Amino acid sequence: MMDWLQQFSEFHFLRPHWLWALLPLLAMGLTLSHWHKQQSGWQSVLAGHLYQHLISHDSGKKNRPPLWMLNVAWLITVIALAGPTWQRLPQPVYQLHSGKVVLMDMTMSMRATDLNPNRLTRAKYKAIDLVKQLSEGETGLVAYAGDAFTISPLSSDGQNLTTLIPSLSPEIMPIPGSDPALGLQAAINLLKSASYQQGEIFWITDGVDNQQLQELQGILASSPYRLSILAVGTEEGAPIKMLDGELLKDRNGAIVIPKLPMGQLKTLARQGGGRFAPMQADNSDIDYLINQRQLSQDESEEEDQSKQDNFGDKWQEMGPYLLLLLLPIAAYSFRRGLITVVLLGTLLPVFTPQAQAGWWQDMWRNSDQQGLAAFQQQQFDEAAQTFNDPLWQGSAAYKSQDYESAVKAFSKVEGSEARYNQGNALAQLQQFEEAIKQYEHVLASDPDHADAKANKALLEKLLEQQQEQQKQQASDQQQSDQQQENQEQESDQQDQGQSEQQDQQNQQQSAQDAQNQENDQQQQDQQQKDAAAEQEQQNSEQQEQQQTEQEANEKDQQQEQQAQQVEQQTLSDEQKEQMQRMQNLLNRVPDDPAFLLKRKMQIEAQQRKRERSPSNLQRNW
Image 1 (cartoon, rainbow, N blue to C red):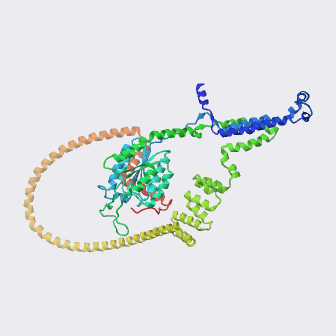
Image 2 (cartoon, helix red, strand yellow):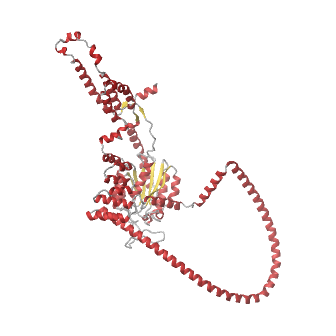
Image 3 (cartoon, rainbow, N blue to C red):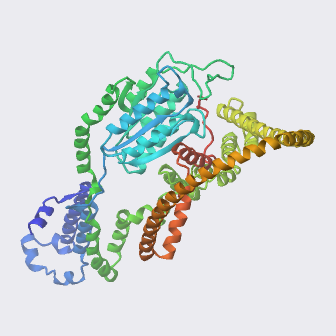
């Protein structure tokens, strides 16, 4: 009883503004009351004190409709729309402050030698120290170069991350270059997929280009997670030393010297709500970033609690249950009249969940408006099926990665924008030549279309690279065939020369054998005597070794037989076969974390190849 009273003490309305609808009900009741008094014509003739005693109302009451039912239905409907509630709904528990992602820059510039021995080695040590101090909650690991890859999902096992970090290097990244926007977006998606409402991204990098800064700021503006940056390198920079000892050069043959842009990274950290710290020799930089997270934890907890108290969807609404009281009134209205049914029919669809779908939407929105609503909610598949406008339909299909449907939709529309979008969809389908034709049509009508120029130039480079690769493969094949023929000819000539040399050596050997035969006979007699003595000693030693080996083998056989008997008693034949297959598969797996990471990222890169075209904002190192 006490529990029920305690719950009911929290009674309130989720939408109290609907209670204003009771004022028209009150006004209508007063109007009807006054109107009933004016029904009899004798009221204007007789005095008021005589009218009450001379006029009888019994006959009128029998034929008067039950208007009180309309008042009751109105009252119930308004209270239901106001959303009465007094019980909280169970909510999923999120670890708001334990979601963290370490984002590591694996571009070729990390091999610059302005730090000893290079930036990459120092960054790995710092990442390991950072993971060890992030002991609470779950931590993930993302690495990026020309594309971003999840090295480890969010996990509370920090040892797993410290094992994988030493295996990272720019050489195992399947796509060279530098696209930090993809890395930042991958870290954000990793936190979102784990349902973290709040989290923190620790970015270890040696800088970004000015062209990439605007895109990164756009991502941070829509991100609920905090970004802290640990800068690696110096503002003076240093050459990039490759694994073979050579220095990296650009297309013009000049040595590349990457410098650390402190100002840009500070701007990104400030916009991301985090801190910026240049790499130090001690742990002061890591402590500076970690302490910020600990200091703001209490404040964010209070803010989250206040937000939870104001969320309307945290309460169980009892309004739908009140609507069951309208069923008897509706049933009675079928016999007495349709006024109440009409009123309820106009109010109930507004309140029911089906009001946002089906025929209700068709009453108020056309197909394009419904498709636009689905498009804004990122329900691209539904939007593509709903739109009648082919341009919008193609855009929704493109967003849902249905590029073939996007091409068909864009082909129905004339104009430079439709041609441009059609070219993008064809590029995603790896149909570069057809995509270039569409870009040429766009440039013919609009020569200043910058995006069409950039995409056309990019696809032309990709076609040239493909053609060069094909030519290179053909030339390599010819060279391999020619080398094989030369090797066969050389082997034949060597065989002939060896046969002649062998004949000469045989003749010389026969003469030497005749001379040495007498000397060998004397040596053999002496050797026989010595061999007899050694043989006796070896026989005795072999007998002792054989005895010890036999005893050890007998013990091992007994242990194996006992183990086999235990396995036969506990495992069935199918389980034994499965264990043998698993062991064979495990034996094939190479014990090399770097190789496994490289293969994993290569597979992901191949899957993404058709999903998006390379960004124009990438740098080569």
